[in-house]
Image (cartoon, rainbow, N blue to C red; front, side):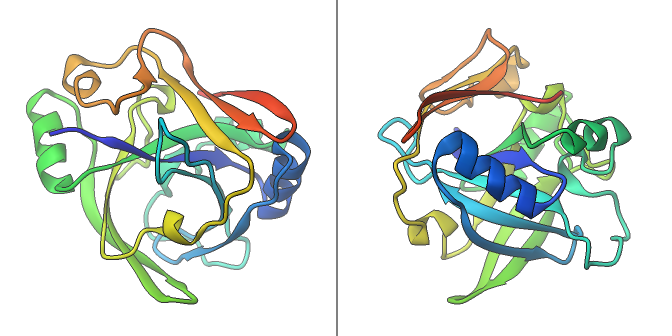
Length: 215
């Protein structure tokens, strides 16, 4: 079993702030995403696919101010006061998501090694092409684990969002995920490096940009 990098997660206080940050920092504007009714969040999406990380994208995510509070804690630590305070000062890289073929089996393998990646939830959101569906690992406490470096795992249905994202001159060149347990490290996608802090480097129209994660 192995993983492929699916997308990076950029947390923002609002989607408007996230879009403005992308324009100023990456030289490109993200496109529309949608709303996650299960979590009370919404997002924007931007292609960052490259030869090293094909079919990858950047998700700009924020708490949806128009949605009711969910019955559970939101994913990616978005309910944590410390992270919300950090994002109040500007968008930050907070996490990454790895795609796999059998998310339940992957979570079971991690659990056998003492890593609780969470329960597998069925999720979806509306798109112009219809309902986008996926299965995703989410802990009840919403924790990312290892400062965001241990990925959330996702298994897509028939449609993948990156297939509709236009090229914009932004490409992911490298991903460093820090020190992870062996059970996770041996499943990392090609191109992901261990031993450094959780960070990503992007080639953009404005030059190379290094994003360092907010723990």
